[in-house]
Image (cartoon, rainbow, N blue to C red; front, side, top):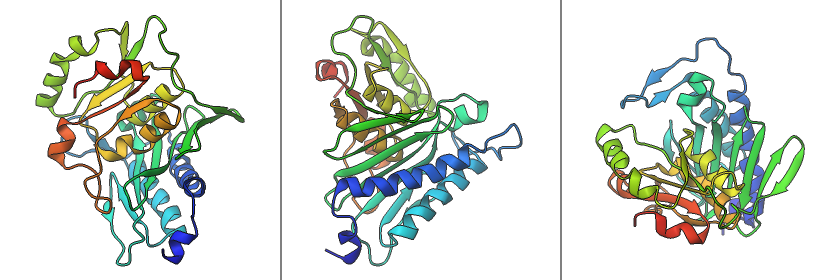
Length: 276
């Protein structure tokens, strides 16, 4: 074990750095105003990026690199940076999950930061939502928590068996994939009373963790979309399925694997609601 590894001997120790990094990104987002956001399109219609995405990711990377310069960082905007002498730990960063919401001034957006160990296990995750005033976080084996209005609350997932259950989901920017998702909605909705599509996978997973949603399922997520939120839901006691890490150092699932894979969370009783 290297000296860098020894500096963080337990998952909860990574959490402090993850919280600091996510707070740095969220502070950038909190500066949003009606002024020019520097909006451009990344390819698919609706797949936007703003100057705030880029500045927030730079802020997150700066905090992590300053504390752990030999850790790998995979970010939505900057890709994977692999140090020459890698520690084996890797951070997955979405500086602004919910960019369309951010552009339209819809409050469901957040900075998401998570870290995985050399064995691929997720160790800590934070979803910091500045417009909501909420910070969701978890470290492996230590439960999941919400801080809001100066209060810290343990998260225990949705109430099991309640009536009027709500499913959260999302849709791809790719028209062909989106058409397939839409065609499968009727079957996916079996057993649920209603559906929500809020536009931030990270927050949807956290809203399962805090019991707002009863379940969440979406096909084709990128790793940075689910990394922190899935761990938070898992530590809240939820059943969670997410794409496996195919390479601890170089990022999550390939595009082919990602497009066919589901990320799901909810009570165990609802695990059969989602396609394999």
